[in-house]
Image (cartoon, rainbow over all chains, first blue to last red; front, side, top):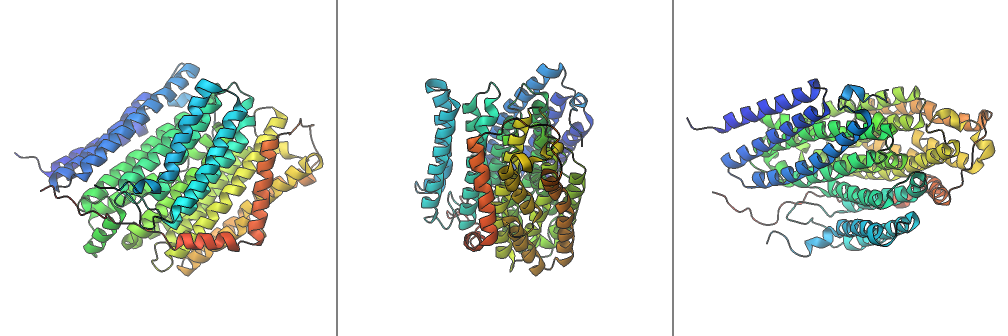
Length: 101
Length: 500
C-alpha cells in the first residue's frame, strides 16, 4: 500500500494531539518541553508531507528554518530548566508557584 | 538570483543592530566592563540605527527578498517605535542593574537581538519570516525574563514564559503548516490572499483550522484573553526594565503582524475570524481591567492594564477586516502604539525609582502614598502617565483611543466600541487611584533617595512627549496616516521554479 497525503496528515495530527496532551497533563518541566518539541515536529511532518505531494519545495525549506529555531529554543529552554533545578532541586512545575493572581 | 544586493538596504536597521550587539558583547569581553560605557555604546548605536532606518526607508516601497518582507511606511513607523522602545529601555536599565553583580554587556546584546526579532515580525509578509520574527523575539525574551537568576521569581517567570511561549509557538507553526498545505503551497501573504479568494465560498475546513491555530499563537504573543495567563506572572517576576520592554515592544510587533496578516492576507475570511475576535477583544479588555482593580503590586497592575490595552488594539485588527477601513485602522493602531510605549515605559521607570527608594524588593502600591509632597515632579509625571493610560485628554493616550475607536465605529462595531468606552471608565478607577495615593494620602514611611539622572531624563521626556502629542497630535497623526495607507504585502517578484 502506498502512503497517501491523508495518512501523513492523520499521523501528524495524532502526534500534535499527543504533544498537546503531554503539555497539559504532565508536571515535569522536561517532559512538557519534550511534548512541545513533539508538537513542532508534527507541524514539520505536515509541512514536508504537503511539500512532497503538492509538489512544492518551499515547505521543506520552511522545515529547515523551524529546525534551526527549535534547536535554539531547546538550548535556551534547557538552560532555564537547569537554572530552576539549581534553585529548587526539582523541575516539577507545581513547585514553581511563587506568583499567583 | 532570488534577491539583489540592494535588498540588503531593506534590512539595514537589522544589520546595524546585529553588528551593534556583537560590538557590545566584544567590548565587555575585551575592553571595558564599565556599565556606563556599555550603555553609552548601546544608546549611540541605537540612535545611529534610527538614522539609518529613516534614511534607507524611502528606497524600497515594494518589499524585498522576493516578497519575504515589506519595506513600507507602516514598517518604517513601527521600526522607529521599536527602536525607541529599545532606546528608552536602555536608558532606564543601568542604574537598575547596578544594584546587582551583573553582566551589562550580555543584557544589552540580548535586548538588541530581541529588537531584531520584533522588527522582522513587524515587516513580515511571509509565513517563514513571520515565524522567524516571533521566535527570535520570544527566545530572547525567555532569557531576558530570567536574567536575575539569583532571584527565584525571575527564574520562575522565565520558565513559565518559556513553556507557555513554546506551547503557543507549536500552535502557530501547526496552523502555518495547514495554511501552507490548504492554499496549495503558498507562504507569501499576497499569494495566500489570492489563493483564498479563488476558493470563493467553498473554503476548505483545513484552511479555517489553520487560521484558527495561527490566531491562537498570535493572540498568545499579544496576551489576549484567554491566552493571557502567562503575562502577569512573567511581568511581575522579570527585572523591571525587561518588563517595561516586554509590555511595549513585543506587544506592538505582534499586534502589527496580526493586523497585516488578518487585514491584508486573510480579509476574505473576515466573516469567520471577525466574530471570533469580537468576543476575544471584548473579553480581553473587560477581564484585564476588572482583575487590575484588585491588584496590590504595581507591576501586576500594569500587566493587567497592558492586557486590556491589547483588547483595545484588537479593535483595530477587527476594523482592518473591512477593506475600505483598513488603512484608517492601521494608522490608528500606529498612533496608539506610539503613545502606548511612551506612557507605559514612563510608568515603569517611575516604578523602578520608587522601588529603589524603598529598597524592600516589592512593588506595593502603598509605596506611592504621599509621594507628591516629597517628589512633586515625579508625582506629576506619574499623573500624566496614568491619565494617558486611562485615555483622558489632553494626552496622547486619549487620541490613540480616539483614532482606534473611530476606525472601529466606521467599520460598524458600535457595540464593541461602547464596551471599550465603558472599560476605559472602569480603568480610570485604578489608574487614578495611584494619583489619589500620591496627592491625597499622608506619607507612611520616609523614602530614600530617588536620585537617578538617566531615568529622570527618560521620565521627563516621556511625560513631555505625551502632553505634546495630546495637545498637537497632528504631526505624528500624519506620519501614522501615511504609514497606515502604505501597508503592503509584496508578492514574489521572481517566477516560481517548477519542481515537477
